[in-house]
View 1: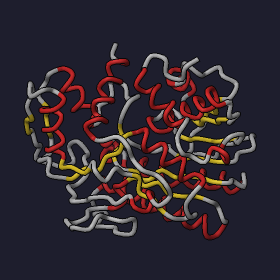
View 2: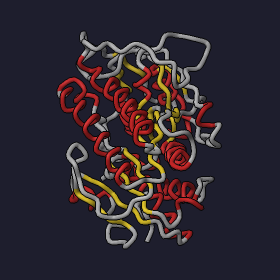
View 3: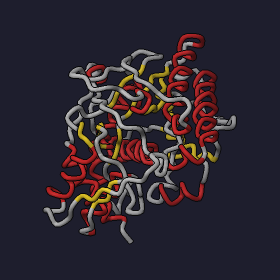
Length: 356
């Protein structure tokens, strides 16, 4: 039984991950727990591990933590009844019990809807801090061999233009009086918690600081900016920008990101952060919109600006000149392979598989 039988693009990605240069000699036969199981990255990590089991008989036991088992049944419809997958219903913001022996843990659970960063800042902070501490306590109590916390490039803050690419310690300004800062600042504190648990309790936790990640496996109903651009191209509708589009974005294809996370699970130094980003996929938002309009919609659509008076209307991040360096991650043996244009092509082909 294929892991994504209705989406051949995603299935191809899962099989590439399953055969990639990850330390499978350490992961095969282990038990791996993933929080945020129904999210984009969490669900694809789980499906990739299941794919590894099917093709290579790896005997990885997968424990998937999800808030909503009914949603998990839909997300994992193709593998829900497989013996190598166990789904645990639980909220990471509350202490949850895991009876199984666990070797490796990956914490992907997080608030991701930009609008909530403005409308529910308290809950965003609580989810980040309480969820991360509960995850780290679990890793400590299970005497884990390895663990990864998924942070965000927003933890860098507002970084000014520089010829030098931003490394992990090159942090910029975060306005603490802006409620939207609940997201980047809580990511920073969560990273600090990881460093604290590594120092005080010897928890082998590494931080994966992710750029904007997208690719195959994203449902047609998704409404984040990259999905809006892709749907505009597919439906031959003009791309509407609600900002000036001057901010630089840093991107990475989902498959490349997941391979990076799995590499980091067994390599790297505990308590340290590693940026996972494709350095070649650094572009202003308006230029990315224009690329989609010209190369992916064959110039049949145009880019239109509709900028609201308040920047908080849509909850978007402040403009930044950030250009991420992934040198530290590449020193561990990771290298992205999918360009930004190809990422969009694969995203669009995959979205058509989920269009109803």
